[in-house]
Amino acid sequence: MINLKKYNYFTGDINCVARGVSDIVNFFELAGHNYLVLTPPRVDTVNKTRELCLYHYLSNKLEFNNFDDFREKISEKSNLFRVDLLVFDFWSLNRTELFLYILEIQKLNIDFIIVAQEYHYKTGDDVNDFLIRTEYKDLNRSDIWLHDKITGIQSTIDSLRLAYIRDKKIEHLFTK
Image (cartoon, rainbow, N blue to C red; front, side, top):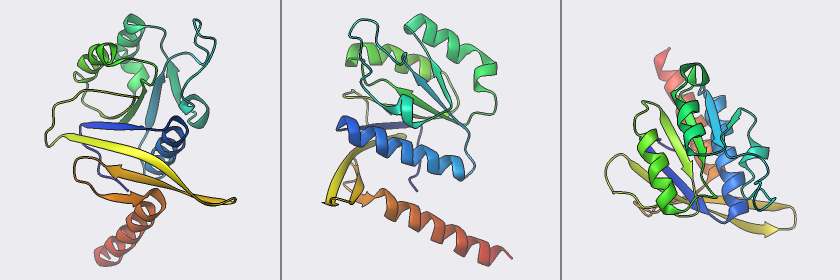
């Protein structure tokens, strides 16, 4: 599928990102990863809306109300038991707020995905930066495209999934 690094940032159009990240996370789950989504409450008490739909797409989730609640929840070892992939829904945070959350996340030794509208990061070998977009083919079909903004490589999520399955089949043939 995609090679996860320490920092995995996903952005794009709100609907594309929700659907694309959920497809990626669900595939990783099928491949043996245990994920946990950390998300703000379903309904924002100030705006009375929920901006990103990861809440509805992924079932294994834990809500946090503010930064202190977030820090408490990721510090509680029982919340992270057997979890090897964390997905953070930071869509409603601005870059300044996001920086505080990332400082806490860096203390963890777990792969993670950050979904946000915007972010600031240092480039390095441990950073992925993906833009997700949807290309509509006709009324019944669309493709979700993943663009790696660091390497410039673009591919559909379906083609990445297919390549991963082929690689696993070939690997299985040669290990017998």
